[in-house]
Image (cartoon, rainbow, N blue to C red):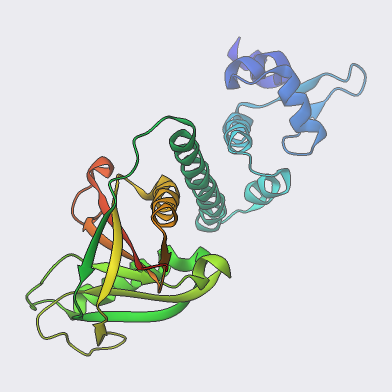
Length: 272
């Protein structure tokens, strides 16, 4: 029986059973040029496949489940080099992960905005001037996360062995949000800040701050920013200077996203 199946090939129905793909899906793959049968009977028009086509059929199915465009699927299948083929797939997965991050952030923000919540616990405090080890740069908004990660890694290496005087933080210019690019400063408060590579000692000016603590990951941090801003306006205050973030409990401290704590602070002054 086995030899008989090999001789005539697998019918589209048999191939559908073996791959768990519908006959309709296999016909669509054939019509689009993704998976052509081993042969098509010229009289009956019946499609016949081989067992060697099972893995490619399943690869196509998985790629299409990931919304890989048809042209990219064809490119992946046509690439003989395994490393190059894996890189093509990885590139699409990176795009999917970025899209998932955006979707998760949007969902988290909407849940916060649409569900009743207590007003944020905003506090006013005076921040004294401090001397810190810092890296500064002008960054595009969509590149901030990558820039921040690289800058903090360089900063941590530069301050190794120095006594740490508090949690790390960042200052983000208003233009970063209004214009899509602006000045960013990340820092670590340490004793005797060094000068190494991009790392420089920087004097952070004293400021009156309106502060609130954002709890958890940054998916919905924009909502907390909005509530802080509303509080500032409602209390007849105005924002002066870049927004400040202090990473009280950061991803480097724990992998438990729910435990992350970020203090958001705006330098403010009272309107007269």
